[in-house]
Image (cartoon, rainbow, N blue to C red; front, side):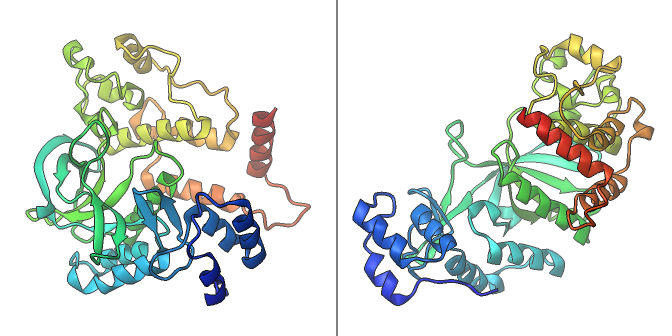
Length: 364
């Protein structure tokens, strides 16, 4: 596919413009000079890169400015200076760095010694979770004057440093390509909203040699699910995440992979409806009791029935009746294939009809 770029003549005429404060004459000139709509849109939204003079791919004022082409070169020049010790992991991280259009699409290999104040939080069905402080903070932009990355060393107004969650994956010394694809999917989804925890990179526990995913710290978030106990005293700590906790865990049993699947079903429900589970119910011990007795989020929202059926399987009160992770992958792959619109006009499959009906109802 041909890549469109601004010519030197166009750059010369607009290089001194402020894309955020264009006057009418400047805007008309840009409309006349830049005929490619994508380039024009990028320029008006993101301005010109200081280095290559082409439109940036991302602009957020003084916080972050991103030129995909220039930053890809900056990342590539640094490839020789780091390795995870795993060729597949290296390739995966490098791919994100070469194709990133903004800071949220970048993964880094982060040496373990760049974390401090590491503390154990909990243990789940698939791994162990820690909280830590990332001493360097996330990448923001490239500093052309000093030839280095600028970084954000604070997470948000609530923190003066950069807290992260380290998810240590059990038996991940030889991490699989399937799991890397899951991380890639998570990054894609997280770019479409701030409610999904960001993934910043990958590191490795020097003792177990297990890989660890570095993610944003969500106070009272899902990382605390496995801390659930049956005592009323500790129930107060549960209310922020209660809707995501499997009923068997509420009864005091160990947190398992099946419990993770239950939590996935609740998250899938939230994604489909746009509403938090039990948003109209007080999150207290009575809700916990009701969940143990069979209460589940309302299912009268406009969700395609085939999707809702999968979600309800994840909610089954019997952990052994919930689908396995690989079975869920197969189910969603099948749904994705069913949603491929490139089929014979005479053949309208069931899932497509349900999605179409749900979309009409949501608009009405």
